Every structure is written in structure tokens, then in C-alpha cells.
Length: 564
Image 1 (cartoon, rainbow, N blue to C red):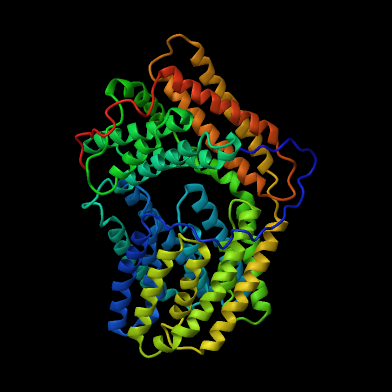
Image 2: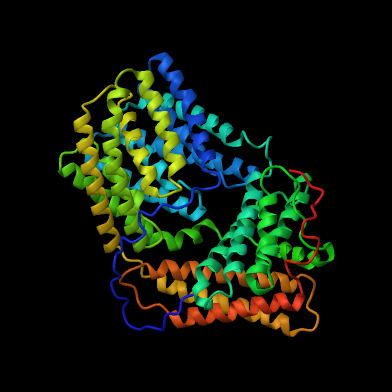
């Protein structure tokens, strides 16, 4: 929790720090899944084209194959829908690019169209929370396609190749479903339990403000788990499994609200039991769970905000993307670089939730790409020994990129950069030195111009959204407080109010963090944020005590008679 005091006037320019930008994190628990999926989706089409002597068509098949990178954190029913939309979005962007390329060879027009496509892809991916990898892969394909000579008669065949590879990518993404049909939701629940355990273990070792990041991470993990579980069918065979996992997520919520009454080791034991295909741990007695799951019903009835409403707050980010990508492409053209889409994609990859995060991504992108250019110099002699080796090198780099990118973005870029350079040689080998020079220059130009565009396009709405988030948190707290004042609130009402307050506080912290990283905006209501968080978390703890529901209740190590 922030302990900042209120400020007034215009927010000062914040120092752009390099501390921690390149620090490596622990790898994702499922780092190997996207990596293997990527190879499984890309290899068969590329090897088939190699056998047919048509590697020059690989860009179109890769457009569909790379869709396998998406939706690994979603339950399989939701994953099927998400992957289908990603494939359609990929083909749609590719179609616009190919039609544009067939109608004009004016580089300025091509860069402009690429920038507009990048802005649309960024806004839609952020609004629908499609990611990782978000918009970058979509923008890479559509931007590259703009600069491939094309005729209208070729477009149907090229789109058919992309669609066929997209269907194969969909099958690859859904392939684990028969083996571990509940894997994504079990992982999401385990992450919520572990995050709650980390906060409970740290609680009491210092001032409450010192543990605010752990608490925020815990609530974010719980909200992610709820979103995953609520995407599951409400009836049928999977409903029983979902209810068992819901009880565990409720226990994580309770631990965050009352950490002093929590046994962190119990939470970790439940999380560990969710690994693999064993029985789902049972947390608590069924009567104690009744009101909690009635509260879940209130969440099930909630509808997500319409897409147009979610797109509204993203207007500054979309404007930054359009302007930055366009200017980066124009600058590359002015320098005489033959592939301005590299600068365009570099700029598109920078834009994050706020300017501070955008700066961090710019540093990571430059470091990773320049290191990747050096790696390309080492790999190119081997890849040039034959097209088969060229394809195999690309597959190895594809695996490495997805395996390493969860450690830090720059580390994944070290593999992405030489892979992208090798892909340009599918149609024919090129001078290694020229490719390296052009990619290095475009990287620096794209990062510099893209970041300057982010500085110019301010997000003055950030402060307003913080005010709205504070108001929403206060209202949610007041609702919970009113129910706490009643001697016997309606069944499930207090749980629904408690969960609504938890959601409001999570949104408040995320909104405040995002706004704090912006420049030039009006001062944020830091004192109101601090007071809203403190009073809200006190009300959450009171609700837990009122219901006398604790994580230690129940059998602890008992299991539901539910198998995945």
C-alpha cells in the first residue's frame, strides 16, 4: 500500500530508472507449453513447404501457426473460442495487408496502413485481454506482409495457407485437453493459493505498508483465478470440479482478508495437491461453503462491460501506437532502410499500460534485439549450409524464444531477433552484414521514435480513472459495511459484497499503479487512495471475522471425490 501523501498541481516528470529492467525472473510454471506448442504448430507446415521447394510461402503459413502461442492460461472451452478469434484476427490483418500491398508500392502508404493496423490490434488485444503475446505477433505478420510484392490473384491462395495453418494451430492448442482437461483452472487456483500464502507468511514481519505489493499480487491472482473459473460451464460434468476449485479460491480470498488467522503451509499444501492429475483438495465443511458459493452466483450473473466501453480508456495507448509506429517507419524510410516494418514493429512492441513501463520495455527491446543480432552472426553460417538447417535453426530459436521470454522480455528477444532474420532468408540467402546493420538501425530508430511518441501523446484520463476507482471502492466498502451492520443479512449477500469489495480494491490498485507511471498528468489523489485501501481491507477482515470462516476449518487434507 502506498504511503504517499497528497499532492497538488501538475505531476512532475518521473526519473526513468534502469534498475531492475533487465533482472531475470523465475520462469513461468508452464514455460514449456507455449514453447512446445509453437514448435508443433510451425514445424509441419514449414517442413512440408521445404519438401515442396516452396519455403518462400512460409510467411503465410507462419501467420496461422503462430496463433498457437495464445490462450495457454484459459480453460479449454474458453481457449477454443479465443484461439478461433485469434486465427480470424490474424487472417483479417493479413488480408488487409496483402490487399494493400497489391494495390500500391508506395512505402509511405504502406507504413501508414501498418501503423493503423498496429493501433487497432493493440487496442483490441488489450480490451479483450488476449495475451501474452498480445498484439506484437499480429503486428509482425501484418507489417511484414505489407512489404511483400503481391497481386490480387495471389491473395486467396496465400490466405488459404494461413487459414490451414491456423486450423492446425487450433488443434495444437487444444491437444492437451483429453489428457488434462482441468489443467488451466487447477493452475490458476494453485497460483491464487500460493500468492495468498506468500502474503500471509509475510504479514506481521513489518509495517502493513511494506506488504502492500504482496497483497496486491495476491488479490490479482485471486481475480485471475475467478475469471478462469467463471469461464467454465455452470452445469454438467465439469460443474462439480469447478465448485471444488471455487472453494479453494474462496480460502485464498479469506487468507488475504485475515492473514493473521491463516496457516500459509496449509494453503501451499493445497496448491501443491493441485499439480498433476490427483484429487482436488477439499477445503472446509460443506455448510460453511454454502454462503460463499452463493456469493459466487452473484459473480456469475455479472456481465462484462461492452467492448466499446473497454476500448474507450485505451484511446491514448492506441494513439501512441499509431503515431509511434508511423513515425518510426517514416524515419526508417528516410534512412534508406529496405525493411521499415522492423522499426514499425519495434515501436508497436513498446507500448505498455503507462509511460514508465513503456520505457522499461524500450530498454529491454533494444538490449535483446542487439544481442540477437550478434547471435544471428554466429548462427547464419550454419543456417546457410542448407535450407533444412535453416528451418531447423528457426525451430530451435522459436522454442528458445517462448521458453525464455517469461524470464524477461529482453532474453526472449535474443532468440526472436535471429529467428526473424532467418525467416527473411526463406526466399533466398542474403548478405549477413547488411541484414545485421539494417536490423540494428531499425531497432534503435523504432525504440527511440516510438518512446518519443509516447512522451508526446499524454494520457490525461489516468487521473480521472483513479478518481472513479476510488469512488467505486468506497461504494463497495459502504455496501459491505451496511450488511455487516445487519444482524442476519440475506444468504450469500455478505459474500457477494465482500467479493465485490475485493474486486474494487484490486481495480483501484491496478488503476493507481498505472496512473502513477504516466507523465504530465494532474496530481493523483494519493491520500484518498491510501484511505480507501486501508478502510476497504479493514472491512474485508471484519467480514471474514463476522462469518467465522477461516482457512484452517475443515479437514484440510481431505479431498473432493473429483478427478480431472
